[in-house]
Amino acid sequence: MQNVRYVKVGSKEEAASVVLDRVRKELDDGLNVLGLATGSTMIPIYKSWSDSDLDFSGVTSFNLDEYAGLGKDNPNSYAWFMNHHLFSHKPFKETYIPDGTAEDLTAECEEYEALLRDAEIDLQFLGVGENGHIAFNEPGTPFSSTTHVTQLTDSTLGVNSQYFEDESAIPKTALTMGIASILSAKKILLLAFGEKKRFALEQLVKGERTTEFPITALLDHPDVTIITDLDGITG
Image (cartoon, rainbow, N blue to C red; front, side, top):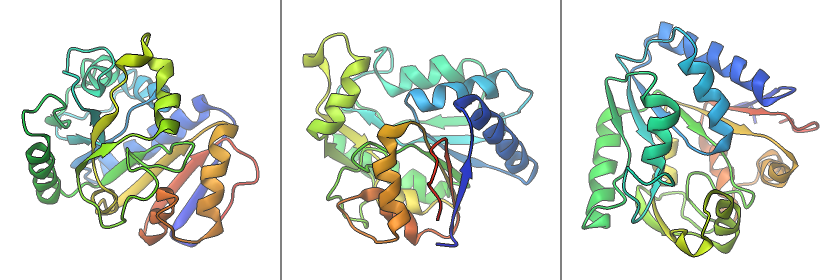
């Protein structure tokens, strides 16, 4: 798997430093469009950017996903997350996040996909779910999928419940870039920390493509970097 490069770090803080150096180099090399992720893994990453001298004023960003039904002022929305952790600290040229409150979610997904096609992401950040999902592409999602509305699995809902005071308020659907949308990025950087992510990474290391584990779609991409604190994860 020469297309997948593994970088072992000792902590999330070390990972943030490694990522900061990588993004600085990408900016120096002319980075124009950045694909962004959310979740606790990204918080120290975005803090390091916010505390740095990195200049994103010429960069356009696209986020992977958003919960259906949550507006940008809802603290559980990814729009709120991005503004709180990054956009309010570092100005970007333009920022795009799927609108979870759109009247027609399917049309919103089609419009978002059209924007992605025109933009051509230079570097896409990813996390991975315990069940191997990337963005909100759950097991069984075709590798040919583009931006779409998806039903979240019980596994994903269970993990996400930690962010909601009322479990009944957790949206069961989301808008997400599809797997083909993600693979259209020129470069991909995936971060995965903690033993709960080991099973998902092991599926990638096996080198077998299967929609049962969406992370294995990355085997079809020419330039993937995995940053992890897990021992024994190598390609």
